[in-house]
Length: 429
Image (cartoon, rainbow, N blue to C red; front, side, top):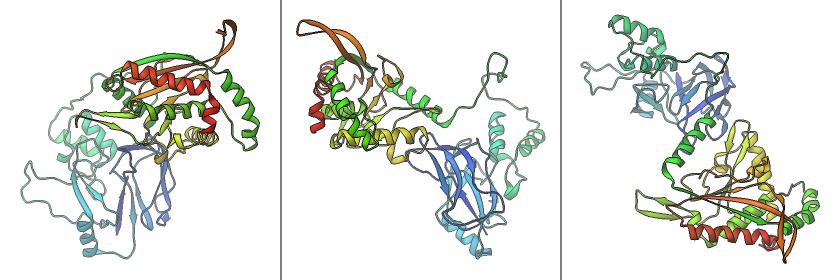
């Protein structure tokens, strides 16, 4: 008998993923726990293991194709369960869920397999209703290409008779349906696709780029942004860093200014809780976070990712330096786990490492604020009524003005600056 394994929900509200690489082929024997496919989601790249032992009899999707949560990934032939027993297992372990057309690889009504759900190899084992009404839900399987084409020509795919395996609707079935109903295809797109020319090339959006676009739009539409820019003199911080650089290097840890900025920010957040909060308009309340989990924006070849360092206030400068190195490397290699990407309460972006000075960082909504760190500049300053060479670190703080007022923003930033001017106090925390 056959078991249909659907793309599982791996958490954090993910609703789709892109097939990066198949580890199995049709006819291959696999065991429970063996990796089936490598999937790229908007947050992580992860292997999806097989829940069952058996032989692969069908694979859905090609590398580069987007698969929605709940859509079939593979069919596995499992020995030992046959006939009526298989049908009863299917009825008992599957759930019928009406879904919107185009929302998954299986359209119309999708049978979502439970952890132990089986489907018989022959047919679905369900009788067709004698009378089909608008309220009758018809169980339809379709290929992703057929689904996309049906949507494009404005055909309801649950009205199409499928001729593929197990009644699956193919693109040929959709075209035949159009001919038999004398229906003229009505393409529902705003304009004809523009073909690549000598002036431009085209590439599909990656999962991570689609998520960045979605999150940036969400931030722009929901947060009322206000930004404050400051400069802090960090000659003492430079001195402390140089004194500890060799000691950190012996333990194979690179010390930068960022661990000090992280620690200073966490300590200031403990005093200014509005910067470590979220606004819940639907329930008419504020949410004040009890932990100080700071995300650090990491630039990768695929796009920006924001791993989170949890409980920054409880970590030493050395531990923070270790965490920054570890998460940055994992971010660039797309090896971050879901736990390393969630529960952030504030964000820091260090564009100074790439040469930037000032910016207006975009809030990582629904957080209250984000701190931007620029590159250190050697600048003439007045110290004890004398002009001397100073080391200036530019800071840019963007907040949601619905949550934080200007006075609180200024007090918070000044406290961060005081910690950075006295880095020894951070080493002692």
